[in-house]
Amino acid sequence: MKKTKISSYKEGSKALKKQLSELISPNAFGVFNSDAEELNKEHTFILKRKVGDKAPNFRLLNTGNEPVNLYDVLKTKKVVLTFYKGTWCPYCNLMLSHYETALPEIQKAGATILAISPQTPEESLNIKEKNNVQFEILSDNGNIVSKEFTTIHKIPEKSLTKMTELGTDYDSYYSDEASELPIPATFIIEKDGTISFAKTEGGDYRNRVESSEIINALHKNKS
Image 1 (spheres, rainbow, N blue to C red):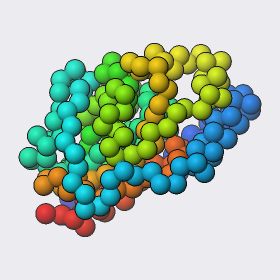
Image 2: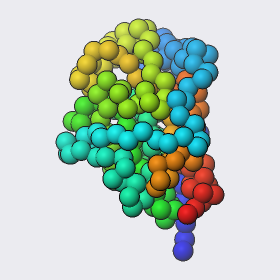
Image 3: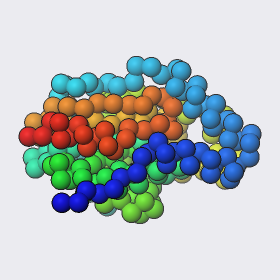
Image 4: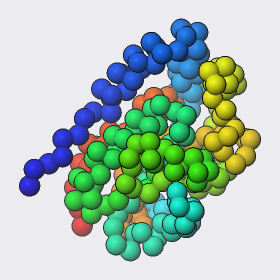
């Protein structure tokens, strides 16, 4: 059977970075890049769960305001669990689109994807439709589940200011005003609840785990 051709996230992010440098002012572009680099230096021990740990169960709302229970999903398939920031983040949109392209291969390996952010279900629906995503996108208000898996950080004030100047109402995407976000991270959870893969590309949110690495890990632990 012919495999789905999957482009590299890294190559896509390079193109995105160039595009952003042409779309926004050099000052704003510099602020966002500087904040990403500072977050990368600040956060070095990010993952809260490691390979071999049992994943804690959770129940979160999907884009249709319906509850999704992790261990119910695990009854029939493995779960690729990934954490992202929000609709306003171009790198999150790129990542979700990248993972959607890889979904057929992930499904062939006996898994599905659950993507989690602290956004409202309405905003989760927006990003789902924007990227034509077929997997579940879940809302974790207050990062209650996210903090069990990855580090939560306060979004830098300089970035918030620049976002406002560019016309982005950051608080409108969330149900609280904490301005706290998960550092992107991805896990594979086996059907018995054991974590078999756990990775982050660091505090620099522009970097994400490649889908090819996820697929390889799924085949390595095929059961």
